[in-house]
Length: 109
Image (cartoon, rainbow, N blue to C red; front, top):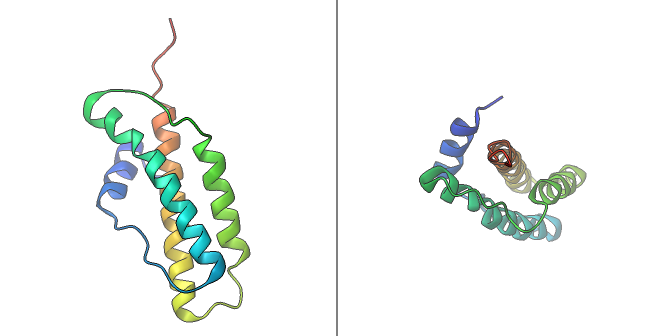
């Protein structure tokens, strides 16, 4: 398992998955972009120590996205399969990053 810092570093350098013309994968790519935007709250934490979680359940959203990608993972063309694999890996990485961020929550007084 990647450490929080390693996952964060990898995520910051990894390009967002490319898209293909496939109904489900186009939808999951859009949802993944939304989740990615929420995960950017982690940048503030790493760079400035500001811990403000996103206003939505990002981990549940990522679980749904991952499930949709896994469900469509049959009968894809080679190009669609590459896109699905990239989206899946990116979503799993986001989940590791965001779960690691949440585990860094300051103790409540």
